[in-house]
Image (tube, rainbow over all chains, first blue to last red):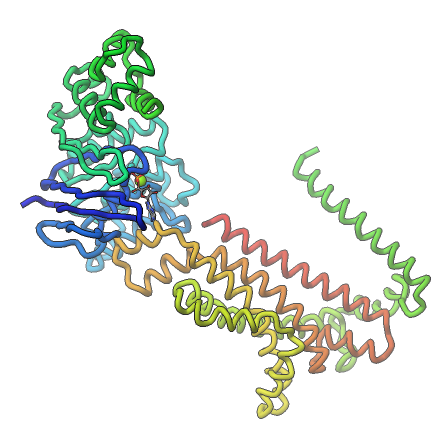
Length: 296
Length: 264
Ligand SMILES: Nc1ncnc2c1ncn2[C@@H]1O[C@H](COP(=O)(O)OP(=O)(O)O)[C@@H](O)[C@H]1O
Ligand SMILES: [Mg+2]
């Protein structure tokens, strides 16, 4: 039995069908990335897993039991951090910890708070308000708050997409490390193919909506720990990236984008996109993604 | 020159220009309107009230700050009554569409009614309280007139709570009480304080009318008394006093308000 399972799930917002016939199963301890471009229903999909939304039809199962509402066993890191602006870093985390572990002593709870603040390297900022923090720091607080309630599954909704490339890289490494230490089940939602490849065991592309469906899962068997710089040169990484991109955009779209942007050769496949650039690999994983979005 | 000092000096400077123009206009008017006292004549009659602001020479003949104190204390009571009633009503309106559909129309009907219309009803309501009837009537009037901005702003604030904050509470499975006091109330505070500030302004407006009609000692009653004594200089003096106190109250409330605005 899989840990989290979606069976024939459909969800519409009003008359607009966002997700159509979605099937998905996630194993315990697995790191799954769901990749799709913005507006395709990623947040909707995550809200369904979290229980914040109910599916119109089909069912969402956690350890075989139907999810009827949200709960602290599924920790969510929201797309826009969702820290409470009137509480300090420590208070934001304490609100969650106090609620989820009412039987603990005050000491145990405050230790839990401090340990998780330290885990995301924010001890110096523990008494600051969210508005006094940078975007990256806020996101780390959000991650710490979620980890502090010790959920059995982590749902991360584009946790890094609002950040600059440098901070993003640092946080990707932190997430990889935290996952390696805790071995929790993680569902990462992202619009960045490279981010998915860097972190996940399995990538599930979300096809272009309306009525987005999940494409065939793609197993990422790159060895861990993965190093971003080294990955860029790895043929397997390039093959996977081209494959995921292709799945996301559909065949014809991917080809058109490749042609219209960089290359003069008309019949080239996305796999070959890298060839003329071997001498100058992209500096950051995001460069690649932007090109595809712009032209697609 | 320090730019901050410069803006402050500028603000004060321009305001002084306005006040001077106002004084000149007043002087000019007093030369053509025989019953209007000039600024100097006004100062002459107002002097005993200003120079001994806390004096108590008789029931109506008291220093200006003492009079203002009576008015402020009555306003404070009516105002807190307004907040105590208005805030929960605002929350209910914000939380429940049904509640809004039921009560919004009646609120819209009662809201524009003048304090002068409420006061007789208030006194009649507390008729059995005897001597206290006037005071209770005044409190009733202040409360009912002043609460609407609090009601409406609180309702808007509750509706404006970001869904994400509520989702944080839902994921943690906060109880209803905790959801209310840990998430909804703090998230609504900035709106509530805008309502509180507007309500205070209205409460202060109402006090004068209330005192005039009930004869309760205070700035408003003083004004009415001096009118009956044909002491027109003190009418102007009272008006200025009421205006300045209202201004100070509003400034103080916006200080508090901006504190809450910057947090959320
Ligand atoms: N509450 C809502 N009401 C109506 N439409 C919505 C709502 N939430 C999302 N949508 C629509 O559903 C689609 C998917 O949204 P979302 O799941 O947020 O996408 P993503 O997270 O991939 O950017 C979008 O077209 C969006 O406009
Ligand atoms: Mg989203």
